[in-house]
Length: 107
Image (cartoon, rainbow, N blue to C red; front, side):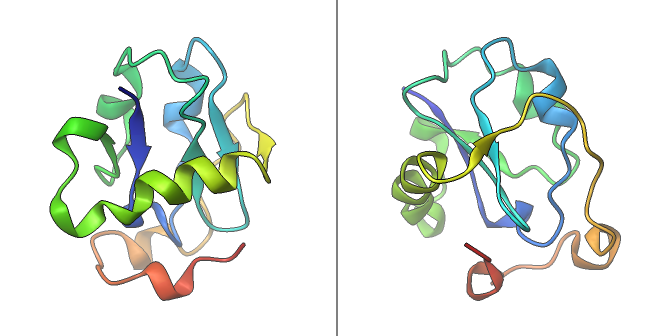
């Protein structure tokens, strides 16, 4: 199993989770983070660090977020590894807690 970043991260991209990851499995895009399922060791330390509750264990993923399994796998192959906290997006507080953000995902 792996962990998955879901739509709550879109337009926020808090990077607190990155600093606790022992295997550097996070990848950053313009307005979203993803987890490389091949690198994730399922330690779960990132879950508690996410201020928008965007990270789930794959087996706990809500039904309406299932598409993010494939999206994390795909985008982790395209985006660069992120190994340090770069801070959230300037719009993070504005978007925190909003839903239906998938259409806003920048690739």
